[in-house]
Length: 282
Image 1 (cartoon, rainbow, N blue to C red):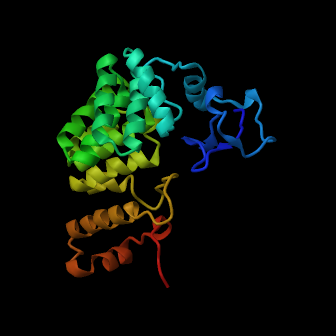
Image 2 (cartoon, helix red, strand yellow):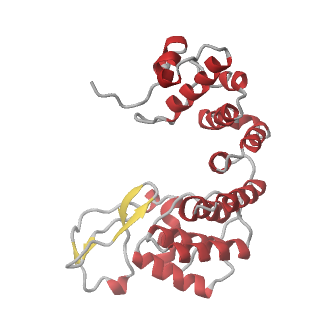
């Protein structure tokens, strides 16, 4: 992306990409009253990637793509200026489901939840797509606390686009929050083979199996050989599941007599070891 930095007395014109922070060149008639920060920094045209091209085309040409609904969005960005341009575009191009979807993303990022919901609902009504349905599910789950409605949206989303890793994870996690553990296990078992080797998705199945007290099956997943590549230091999810799972194993075997000292007893028989990503203080 060609980069020229401009600033007003109050702020720099900044916009956020999925890949980092960048400065977007505004239309020429808006630059007259701005002072350049640098006359030297410039990026070649061939450095523009698809994720920048969406929004540069909108700003420079007043156009926005309308891809196939099965294509996963490659980037997101927002600013008040960009939103106002996209709002005008959507008003003149109401049949572009993708523009309505991105407008909802910008509105949500700016804390305007109801407007975001309206935009995503319009996106789905314009052309049924998994992405806006997924976002509506997250609104219901995380903002409104209406978990059953969230499950319904995620079911619709996953039916439209099976085999997508991110949508599948959101679906399984929503089923877990809804305590629909049988459905969670079934959804995992029905997934494409290539998804079943992903640690995060295996964790979801093991979580559901543990809640169903199907400990032997859960132990086939969560054991000292388990790997979850995207786990971060400080994550307690595996540790919590480990102690719940192996406490159940000990309880079933009649070895868990003292419920007040569960973690110590689990450690005695089934040490967490290398799967302990919790932060510890000395």
